[in-house]
Length: 291
Image (cartoon, rainbow, N blue to C red; front, side, top):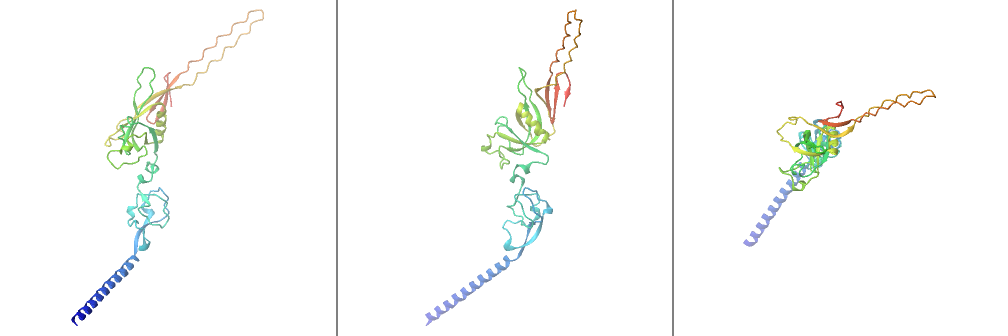
C-alpha cells in the first residue's frame, strides 16, 4: 500500500512539473512573438541615392519599421551613414544597411580622386620605384632625366613635387606597415595630378627617363620649387627667302646681262623645349622665347 501511494505521488509531481515547464515555455514563446512585432527605428533613404554617391545628412532620416521587416545589418544612427558612399543605387524609402555603403577605398579609383585631379600611371621598375617600398597614399617627387646628347651628361630635374600615389600596380591600399611581397615587383604607379601636370607627365614619359623620390609626410608639398626640364629640339619657323632681283633686259645687239644672285635661305633655327612645372615653352637658338 505504501509503495502504491509513493508511486502515485511521484506521478502527480512529475505531471505538475511537466505542466509548469510547458506553461513557462508557452509564455516565453508568447512574449517573444509579441516583442518581435514591436516597431524599430532604422535609417532610410529620403530620396533615391545613385551608386557611388557620397551620402550627406539630408539624404537619410530615421523611420519606424516592423521588427520582422528590419534587415539584420540595418543602421540605426544617421551619423553612421553620413560621409559614406553608396555601393549600389538605394531607392527612396529603402533601409540603409552596412552592406550598401562603404568608404571611398571600397568603391574603386574614380571616387578616391580629389575633385579637379586626374589619375595617370607611369611605367616603373623596382629601382626607379624605391625598391618596391612605395605604398598608396605616399607623396613623391617625379624626377626626369632627358636622353644623352653627345658627350654631355644630362641633368636630372624634379618636374613634379609632392604628388600623391593613388595605387601601386593594382593595389589601392595596404593593411600593413610594409607592402605585401606580391606587390614588390610592380611595374606601374598611378599618381594624382592636375590636368596640366597630366599633360606634362605624358610628354616627359615619352622622351625622358622617370624616377620617383619618396617624400617625408611631415614635409610640405611646396617646400621646394619644381625645376625646368629641357629636352628635344623643335624646328623654328624657316625665314622666308627674299624674292630674286628682276633681270634687266638688254638691247638685242648687246650680250645678255647675268641675273643677280639669289640670296641663300636663312639657316633653320633649332628650338629647345623647356618644361617648368606646369609650363611648357620653347627657346630658339636666336635668343627668343615662345610659349
